[in-house]
Length: 189
Image (cartoon, rainbow, N blue to C red; front, side):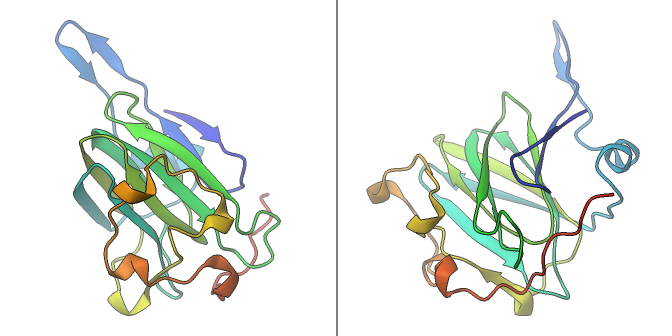
């Protein structure tokens, strides 16, 4: 696997090594050993999958301490625009985002560490989206910031009139009204 750094410290794009032949293709979608060698120690404890139709926007979600989550996400059918927003207080990139298109064809994965709000928009007719989490889901710690917050400058590539949000996701605060529970990023060694 190849690990690609992004413009913000923390989120990473991961491209698997794909073996193709006349039968199709094969790749390792996750190797604990290789992930820890190239990214760092992690213990994923829960895998999730969602299926959504065009225009669905999910997010921008995170879990509050002490139940923070890192996620490794990928789109196994269709295409999504996946986004991580830095919500670490004191971070030089606070409020900035990284966006990556994840598709069934590019097989890319996106690693979102703790301290980031995460969301995605479905760009294809339907999309099946999978994510590994290093903490179990805790409904009492579930939170988010508004996926429609214009101040974030995210081009979701979905016309406003076609966007489909859950009722829960329409109630999150904009970043300017939000009090982050995350401290500044750690300095890398």
